[in-house]
Amino acid sequence: MIQDVLAYLPHYGLNLLLELPIVLLVLGRSCGWRRSALACILGNTLTHPPLFLVFPRVLPSWGVALLVGEVLALTVEWAVYSIVARPKVAALALTASAAANLCSLTAGVAIFA
Image (cartoon, rainbow, N blue to C red):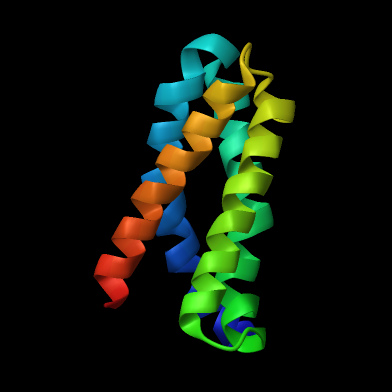
């Protein structure tokens, strides 16, 4: 289990490296840079480990795990961004979540394909 977690950490780091600048770009001016960064880190901490470590083991295929995980990530991160970053418009939080997840999904598929 410890080896799984240690092997996982670079993937989590890469995910934050890809998503954090996008969330800061979309939410930073209206919500503040610190709140936006906190929202991104919290949202990814809640969604990325299950998507990467749990779903592939409990769902019937990689495709199903990816679909369920991305829908969950989009939804949970949108909620976290809306609550923590307190954007003036909820659509801004949805835009941040969608853009960040599309970027990391595309990179992940390219890396693991």
